[in-house]
Length: 277
Image (tube, rainbow, N blue to C red; front, side, top):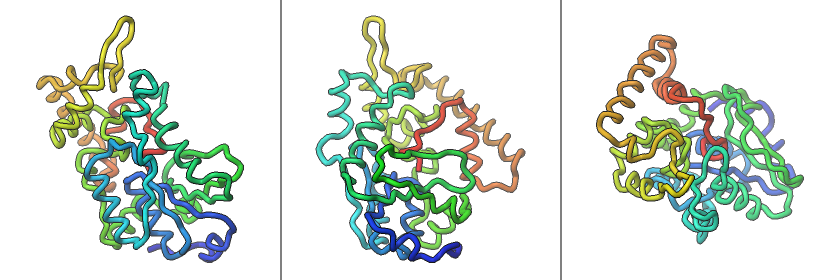
């Protein structure tokens, strides 16, 4: 692994609690591994929506065994369905992200309380995003990857050398988070339909129309429209074209990065910083 650019004790000796929030994705997982021996008192937290992919839960179990430490699972009783009922059946969207607030941010801040906390965030040096910055004065964000100049290749190397590897859902999906995240691209929805038809059917069951309103996961179309054979074929064809374009444009880049670029090019929605780490 890359050497630390400052003594490990600089972080470990800071007073207060030290916490890594895990999403079940590659970046936060690699960060937990990277910091494990540098900060012995590090705590690990996962905010469970109760609607994660089985691959995500399996990946977290694998990480927990590697770390030899408990990953605190928050939201033991109030998952997605509870808050959906509280919001009158209104599905979350990019405009109303109640899922992020109720299932990620508030549970983490409740877990932290009023204690002094250093929150370690897995945003890489090759990314242009800031992630969740708590407004609570007792929570201070720390960005180890940015401080140490670690990029995607370093994250992949950390996961490979640890034996954890990448989450298996990266074969068809580039984001962690709940299985029907509205930020998913069309190709990812198709992947869910083909890999986990029962969860795709569940996602469809949440969609509904009523007078003057419609609650779809995707603003442009319902999942019933998306699953039509001709639409699935179109989504796959367009994804293949975007991926080939990225291959030619950047032939030296790893496949994982090219797939991410191809998915990002599908539309202009920016993913959730909380769930995508």
